[in-house]
Image (spheres, rainbow, N blue to C red):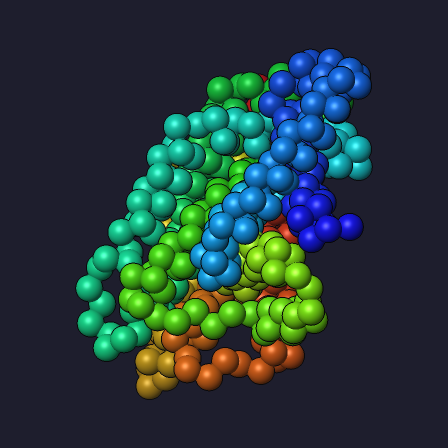
Amino acid sequence: MSPFLSSTLYATLGWLLQFALALPWLAVLDPKTFRRSVKNPVNWLIALGVAVGMGIGLTVFCNMEDKERLYVWGRAFGALLHAQIIVDFFVLILPLLMLLWPQGAAVALAAFREGIRQPMFWMILALAGLVMVISPFLPYFTFGEDPKMVLELGYDVTMLAGVLFGVLASSLSISEEIEGRTAITVMSKPVSRRQFLLGKYVGILLAVMFMTGILSWVFNGIMLYEYYFEKTDITPPGWIEPVRQFFADKPPEMQKLLNFYLGGGAWLNEAAEKLPGLDFGLCQSMVLLAIAVALATRLPFIVTFCSCVVFFFLGHLTHILVRVSAGNPLISFTAKLFDNILPGLEYFDLGQIVVRDVQPDFRMFVVYLFSVTGYAVLYSIIALLFGLILFEDRDLA
């Protein structure tokens, strides 16, 4: 097979992968049209023809560009792949929940849809995205360490957006449904109070995860621009050079297409490197969302929201209060009491790791990551159990 045909084949396979990832969200976007189109064999032939045509176009484009520019264009291909993976995750996780947990998942699906349809969701998302977009242009006066500041700010903005939306959505949704007596209608069907409350929690948490996923995609692009804006060399992933060496004996056409795909792989690699920091932010959202859900079963919206704000600040400050109050027994006892009862949100702070010049040991960091995630899950379960106790004897009539 000639080098051009081989390159066309591999380019077509890349586009077929993109088309395959588009199928789940297309099925949700317009189910009736999708089912009708899938049953028609002609549409499959048209899709294959489009993929072959785009493969030929990509091969011709790769032959016209140099390797470095193809590496940059490949990142756009990887960004499209990344966006589709994020959407497909939420398209597939909800039917899986319906299969495993029918009654609770129905409540979760309704809460998820209600959450992402609210103007508040898109306003918070747009505001967080705007802060990320302008972050590379802010003066940090860090003597060449601006990318680290933009990185830390991106993690913080993503976390704050998720926490703010989660607390607001849960406080409003649960309080309004209980006070407006609409919860009675839901629980008149075969849905228990436990399924109602946990379903609300899971649905809003999925909406928070969806917001985090969108912001993570924006965050990845902003960091690439920040490195370009600061004229900082980006260290390529360690696996790229061995792959290039492995295919060094291939024709130039194949090597150019390979460089395009390596750019896409580099985007996905950079997105994967940000997952631990995003996980820390989601852990904070998970904990505070559980507290908000528990409080919303008894308290009105404004009291629940203000209480969660207090929990957020105290959760970040109790460890400092314990240290500075060592000389006063009464204050020290109060600080230790808060430190043991309130969530230790300082464990989710990734700032000290981001600004370090020497990266932490990989094994220790993985252990710490799983420990912190386990702590967040355990604290959320305790808060939800407390909420179920409060909700069990709540008069809904």
